Image (cartoon, rainbow, N blue to C red):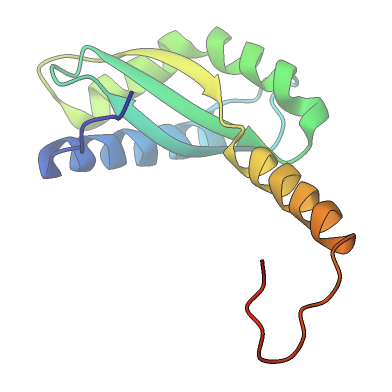
Length: 128
């Protein structure tokens, strides 16, 4: 199912949420379970009552602990959003690991394996 394109307003809201959350995580959280986390993107609902926060970690071994730390800090992060953004609603945050980068690396590795077994194309010939 294809997603609808985001409106300019919603892209601005998503960006503002991402910026505030990234800063709050870097400055305010000291949970030992929290690894090196990057907020890749945020998708808020149209009414901004809910927001999905997508993140990655530097090491895959930090994924579970970081997710637990973020969920544990949900209230603190939501209060920081309320204070910084002064919007009508403070979104209920849910945290999701963003596997896009890992999936891209695996796909590239697979393509490299498949094409390694193929004979090189002759000069001037189109590759199959």
